[in-house]
Image 1 (spheres, rainbow, N blue to C red):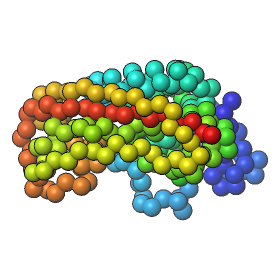
Image 2: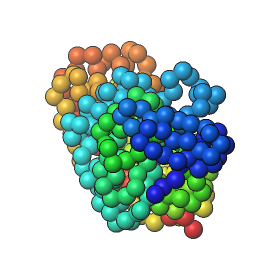
Image 3: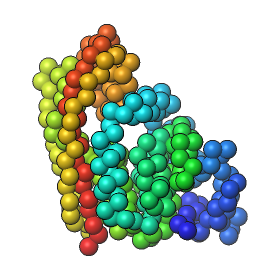
Length: 261
């Protein structure tokens, strides 16, 4: 069984149905839905770090509508190819992708957002979900066969410390270009530069390209609120989306597989 590391002393946590506790008595109770909060208060940069409840709910509505299902199918195929015994999803969010991996491997989902982890643990009873930072993963050295990182920040040091492989998802050149055309006078193409992971080699690169048609303002706003543009776009540009009822946009993903040397 995959072992968790105590965030206080670094010792092994004994995980039961109700709690996790190390030999020195550092104890972490499991929530009713089953997740563990391993993020120490002194390591929080805000009272509630990570994505807000509204952002989590917008992303859940959009993903559950099936718009990114081709990506999930491609990721499942990639993970099946690797056939890991242990998998950690770094930045698991509400568990849309992680829940598909937990039937193939012993899975841990990690995210800063307690709202996201709560919903992930309700969605997926097979995997174990933790509120924790990807810059201080609650697992031991070399204990993870595959880390997945899907539109999330990453830590090259932590990934090297714990994982044998990394499967990352980044946006393709024209990802969401239709949305950008609505927001910006001069929409730009994405840079498809992959992760900077010293000690790993890029061994495969898969493309997932398609288009989506959104037919309601609610869906358009849900999509917008789960993108980085939500934070970067001036308010006058955002106002263009206020009454928009239809949006057609290309969707483009790159799945990058890295292997530790």
